[in-house]
Image (cartoon, rainbow, N blue to C red; front, side):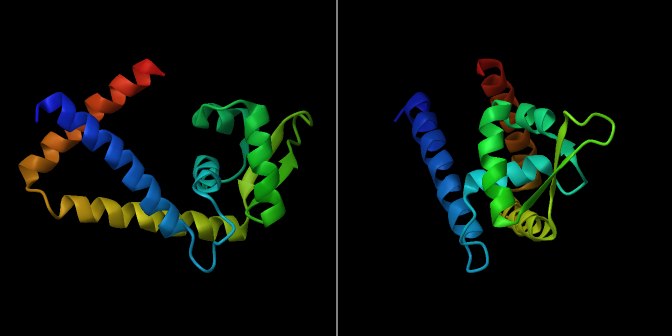
Length: 145
């Protein structure tokens, strides 16, 4: 098998496998109502405090309308709080509720465990090479989007 075929297979399978693992890790007894997309929205909102919808949409690279649909669902489920800016009542702010903060930490734990599992299999040099390759790969995909 040549490098092009190997890379294609690895990238496609890796993307699929990470999505599957993430979905399984997220959907515990406590978080049965949360999808991977929900979790990515909560991750973009972050635990630091209120963010405006436009900046969250920009970070996720979706329209504000698309984000509104996800946020409405997360508000209904109790993971996100929505409010209006005191300075400009037209600006909608979103933040994680207590339940959302807890789900966020649950998701971060999955990411940390995944990273630790990968790194423990690699030598220091292999870790540096992987990091450089992934930075270049990310740059390539960013340029394509």
